Image 1 (spheres, one colour):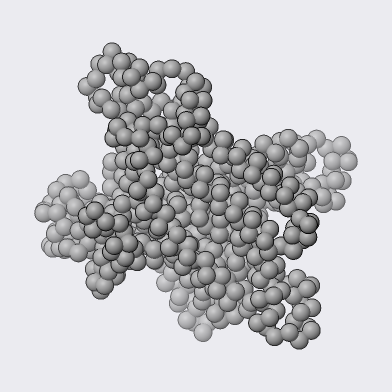
Image 2 (cartoon, rainbow over the protein chains, first blue to last red):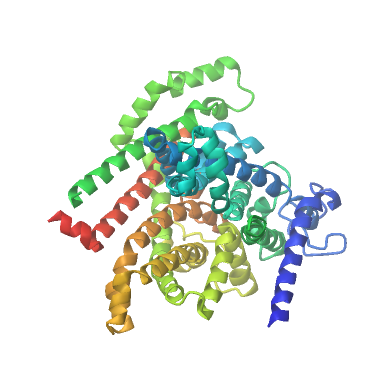
Length: 263
Length: 318
């Protein structure tokens, strides 16, 4: 039983590392992902081991090159959303009153809009760019962080050590940074991985809907090649599986690591 | 607070939120530099042509004026005219909205009982064998993007084992219900995500409700498990569950956008994507406003359900 569990965990870790490796370092090994090497939707053959896509380009080259755009933007955006959500949630939870009302209204407004709608409205207004994507992820992710932070802050302000610090003459800033923050950071970071997975999903969804950068992208490959799925499945199957592993790994793996480091 | 007061406050908050959504949508799509005039003329247009077009479309006037015009027209259910299709937005979105509504409705009809069942099954025996298996599957299903799930479903059930159509196009001149088999895979893809997500929250709610004193008392009094769950546990768990399913609806309307693309289903996603591509501001704003209104109304309906099952608020209403 114990051995089986280790084997399972080891296999999972190996698969995740492999996918991360493909995403980060794949572009180094991708030949010319834009070159047309054969007829559209050709089956695997010598020279193109995964066949060709809807435009006759090599699927393997595009798979190797198409993961990196799904790593950088989500990671940066999720970190920004976490910091912003922490600040807003701390302000709302600590100062109560009008500050709290404003923060809460803003949160519920953004939570009520489907993320895809926010994505499309901003794509319409600004067009696609890494900055647009980061802002979309921040707008959809911040309210979640802010809600959790606010709830934890409300709990913390009641605690004796915060009251004691404030009664002892510490400034608001000092109480927030030195007393409250260290005590709420763990529950707030606990679902960092979940939010990262959502960010990867949104970034891939933009490409999937045809709005990504022009280069190869796992999300875009799925929608580009789904029509030829009965001719050759690899243009959909490989990016879909890699993208699935990437989001599951972000969701489960990162939360485990954060949990261990902060323990 | 009486039930009536509670309702009045909720309705007022809903109207206020819808107004805020309208401001955000308008600001996001019109105050920002996206420009329907230059988009509709193409890259070769001269500055004079663009200026003339802007005057034709009425986008050269200050935006507060345009917002008030747009908002008051929307109150009369007039969402303006599509700049790319030259038809009223209401006509453009009516059919796709019905098609997407059908998809969302069917998905909800499958997902709600499924999520309640799974949530009860796992929440009544947390840590048990069933719980561990279902929870592991649910976490994986929630993490995978919905269009990836949809793509994999097509791969398995339309390609490897060709049971169902890969493309969900209704017959010419007919609706999706004329060929019901085209709905199976899209609904399955949406349900997999929705049931996995909602069952996690139902599970947590059931665990909380199970620990309540009155549930424990009912169990200690020797009532059969069936009665304990149906009469004592479920009413306590119902309010958070109703909220969860209102959230689910919001998620489903977002999820359909990507799932529909995989299946070429003639729903709102095609309208939305085309609107963004053609800089059709009126359509984008109209669809956004309609979606937000539907979602906000579903939250109010969830509150009404809570009112119906929560005896404390019912007593207060008398």
